[in-house]
Image (cartoon, rainbow, N blue to C red; front, side, top):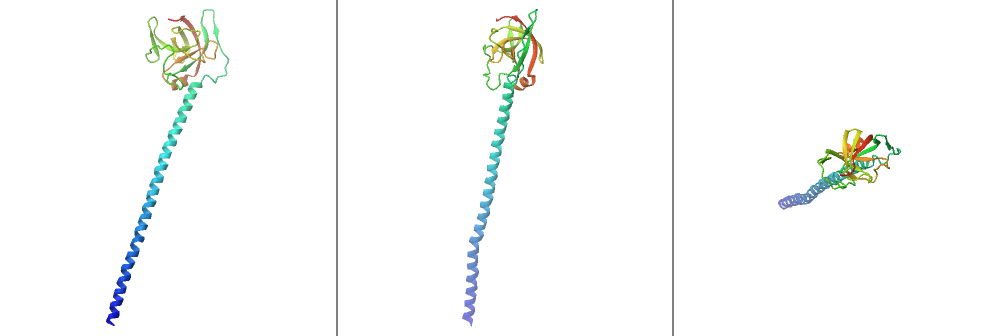
Length: 200
């Protein structure tokens, strides 16, 4: 009877310790499973955040390209006929547009290679005159009085070229401004102009 009691005690202890050994790996694997789920969740969120940043950058670049395209083509898409009139006193009228050297497709330099102070050129005779792009019928250095623009009346000087401007085109001059935004804001203006010096 006493032996039977010892057997039962040993058997009970064996079962208890066996159960602990069996439960321990199960518990450990459950923790690992939980950690794996957390890792997967964190990795998925990180990937989604990176994707969102990349998408946002792509959208911003597309918007910037659209704005630059608007500035570049603000006048080209105009279907208005060429207006070029010269009065008896030598004053002509026509359409002008506005541009910035930072526009997409612009080199950032003037065709004449002249040095500017902002958008102005310091001419020995006429002082500070606004830089303009003109058709090839005007030599570099030609000074022209322009009136009727959103910038007011001023003397401009031909220091740049443009394929879409000239007395036989829809725009007679492109007037240099500080930024693409300013160019887009002014659009196209009807002006009067008068050549006061041919070339330098």
